[in-house]
Image 1 (cartoon, rainbow, N blue to C red):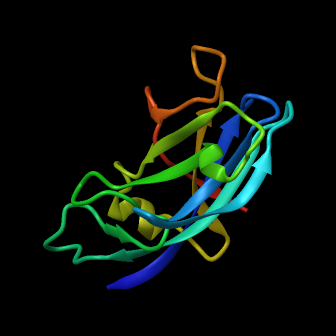
Image 2: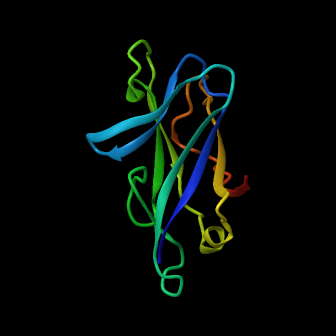
Image 3: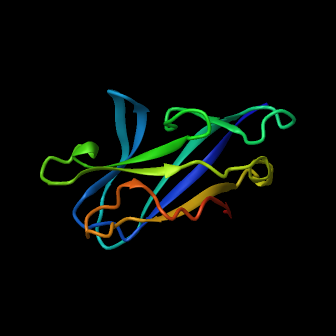
Length: 146
């Protein structure tokens, strides 16, 4: 079985005056898309992933596509921050790692044409700068009906 699903990441109150964007591609061959400069508002990123696998053999769906990073059961999406997102007038050079773990076949089956999987993560870290590294604690993904 192969299909596509839509995911949405909401960055809650990211550090102001910093560019955030969704990483498409990996290694040295990537681009930052959906670039947004933060104000005091939340930022939203939406994208699609491919879902593969066999419900009878695979405990979890296999997620892939141009936004997916990592391997095996350790898949994730990057939000590029500051210089990684192409901003030249900043001291911030960070990436935020959003885990794709926990997305189940039940989640996939519950999606209809006008729904998506959504997560919200803090946009500002403990040091007052942009949140970076792997989101912890990660609340996971939930279904949002449009």
